[in-house]
Length: 120
Image 1 (cartoon, rainbow, N blue to C red):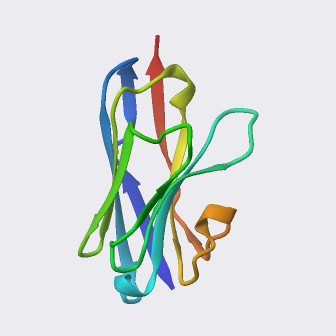
Image 2 (cartoon, rainbow, N blue to C red; image 1 turned 135 degrees about the vertical axis):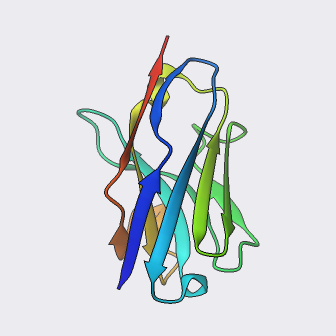
């Protein structure tokens, strides 16, 4: 079992930045692919970013490429979000998966989510 706890969400103006953090506990962190998803009101949850077990490779949704950066250290995963837009407003979820399924929307473990609101 893996427990994931997100933090760092909040209210920011368009063009601003936020850094989300996800603390993982439980099983060995290095055994999991880690990622971020988001869900806006009335929309389905969508993939945002993922990082491989060893942190060597990262993957991004086209909508955030060049603006968001995923990174990991020890039992933490981060999502640095720059040049935020109102359409980035959503609940952001941290996810962990022992297989490389995150980009397809699947994960064994999910956090409770943190709200990000971007005002114009």
